[in-house]
Image (cartoon, rainbow, N blue to C red; front, side, top):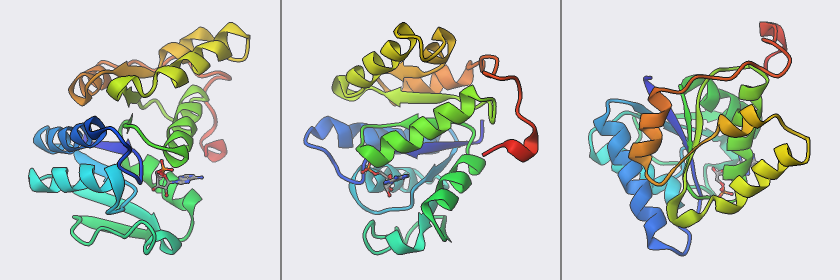
Length: 195
Ligand code: AMP
């Protein structure tokens, strides 16, 4: 594993533990020699994780649509800030550049991004791990909702179980190291059909 994509809030959230974990995550990713791939912003937990990785001497690649550079305040100190044309291009580029997807607490953008990667994974478009750092139980309701999808017949249990939940970033990254992707839902998609 060479690079980790972190999805997280463009706000800090109300619990200081969220920011603390973002700083731990950035530091740990850098110390493990992994490149951090993220949305490229300077605000919220996104900025905290990037600043921590840079402070620890890590390589950080941000990917941002041009029309968000002002709102999310494109981080000027990154190893590389890729400016792309659209949100779809951003998400595709972040996915391509990364070997795993780690979700810290965040809002709708964060959920949308990790759900996209999870659904691509279960379709077999990639075999990379998706995980949540469940700071203060933030992802407990989501975990229940995902379990309900299986309980009510919309999802096979193996695609519930493929998601990694951990109390700490360290534990999540350790689980990433031994992740084995389940068999894809419809078999492996032909390359031209992916994304
Ligand atoms: P949020 O979790 O809503 O604070 O947003 C976190 C990141 O997700 C930010 O970089 C947003 O630009 C991004 N984002 C917001 N909405 C979307 C969306 N619909 N699809 C993908 N990313 C989004």
